[in-house]
Image (tube, rainbow, N blue to C red):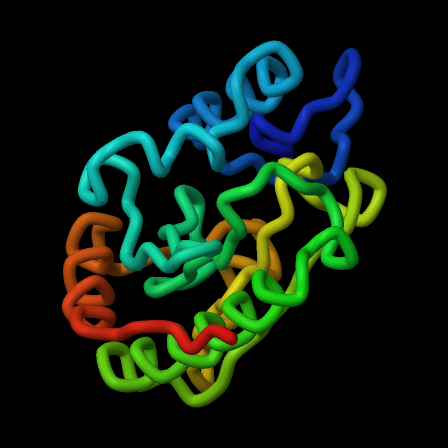
Length: 184
């Protein structure tokens, strides 16, 4: 007779068919999300801190690059304008140029420091589109490697990130040192 583990029990004694991966550390992310509407925007607050404290790897004139606090892969960064705007169409011409230039340079730096096989670039415009912080425009730059989608993200919706954020930030910040984004 097959007995379902306790973790896969639904209401009563009926199995619900789900395995559980307990990740209590994710509660920080969940709690922050529920308070986001009441607190200051973390992307507006980040530039007020030191680069190390805020995980910023580059500061331009109108835009900056910050590590993703909950990365999909090592080297996952966000490109953001300093201004608190929700949509790509809200960027000024100058911001749009720097935003694009910084994105391209971030890819170059990540290629030099992490040697990925490809990238995912993306912006979720609005909460309904999946933006976790919908009020402040941000673009994800996610390095990808052949075989990086092992069973964990597919089966357990969990990513194993083999490097600490501080270590990755230091490598990328060194790659950005001396870089000046082009502007008009």
